[in-house]
Length: 254
Length: 256
Image 1 (cartoon, rainbow over the protein chains, first blue to last red):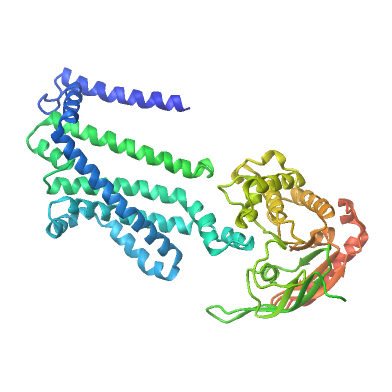
Image 2 (image 1 turned 90 degrees about the horizontal axis):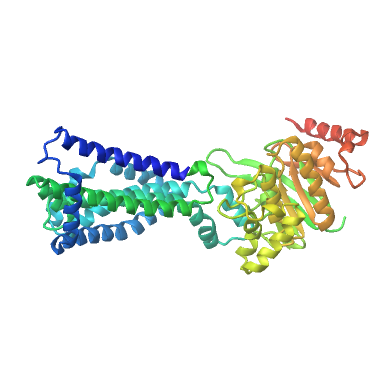
């Protein structure tokens, strides 16, 4: 089953690259707008060796990391409190959903006005992107814990602390990890968007610049790099998610 | 009658909800002797489960008090009182054996001792081969056997069972009843068994406590007097039928 899926994925990739090659070979695409894949790979390699570009990559990584480290604990604790305190949750939960529904990109000009074009604006924009989706998922995780399990644990003499550590946390974990993973995706969207809008450093800033100067090999190399890195990060978090939810029947796993 | 092993004295419970208060139990009193198998039957909503929750220390009574093994119930007493619920309520992220040991884990019993105890109980309920399976890999009946084993893990003197076989199909239910009797005969626990099935109550018990509809109260206490070991053929016997009719009659008369 797994090898079959892998063969399918490879075939899809080969098809994509084949179409790319064919487009150039048969003159369907303008070579100045679509450089050859080999050129893109070569450009990417040179970019990775370029100390100047590595600074940009490092800045983006730092912003993403900082934003996540700030957003995740804040959002998970918010979610726990809102999931637990029903009355409070009834008031605040809809607000979380409202904010989550608004595309945060429209606030970017305000963020830039408030926080400038340094690292802080990107980190804060990443935080606000990740925070709401993680909080909402954590609320759902708290609500998903079956109350009879809690009652049973109490009957077996569990202290309130034990109810939390032995029942609530393990029951919530897989869903919370799902939230963290999706929060990370949102976080990266936020950081890159802020970098593209106004910045002196960062991969987003570079990619925008390459686009504006029609430097297609670099632009595509940048896109390829970000894509690969985010896919790898997401897959790592998905592996964690599956591990945390190993006990769930296969049909629950997404 | 001398003080019983389980002693319930004038227990009443009124729920104060958003609307009118609901009277769930009205001065319930009974006593159960040590080592007896006693069933509590009554129509749905008569407060059977409420009574059991009070005995388990999960809920406070509005009036009256309950004593188990000479101790007044004021909170859960896991070492003295084992619990088995209608649903197995196993922790889905723990294997069968670890689930059985869970009440010990809450008390800080070290892992090897928990594991050993769990395996002894797995063999008691005839489930040795599923020790390392997760709950979702087990059938409903198997899960309930694990739950029964977990209820016995502290070697409690009393086991409270809240309709433990209600979700099982007829055949599994009868077989599980047989197995429960065998376990009871081997361990000699005092069992208080809640059910809405009259046959099940008569078949399993020494004594049947009959409860009437809300507010729940004890209508009568019947000694079944059936010989042990019980066999499924007894369900068709004349004595059995008479007991069954008697309970029907009691519950029928109590209907408003």
